Image (cartoon, rainbow, N blue to C red; front, top):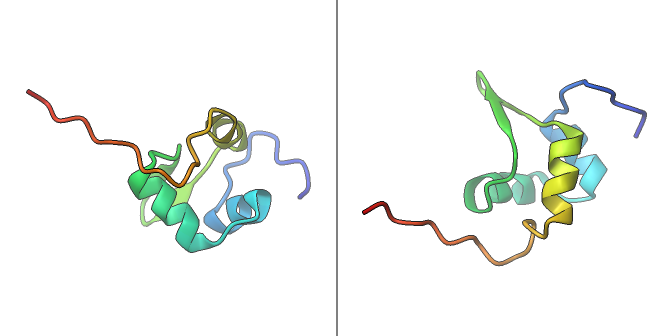
Length: 70
């Protein structure tokens, strides 16, 4: 993938970068709080945010528990 600089990445771009399917990315957004930003109907990503999220182990198959507010 060419250098992206500060450019926002699309779902296709982030799939290529991570080597995963669109279904996986949408699942991670929904269940694992993947760092994604909604712009209208489209999702956009910052490569550095996603890379840090992956390094922190947040992309594991185990969904994060949702905390209930008291």
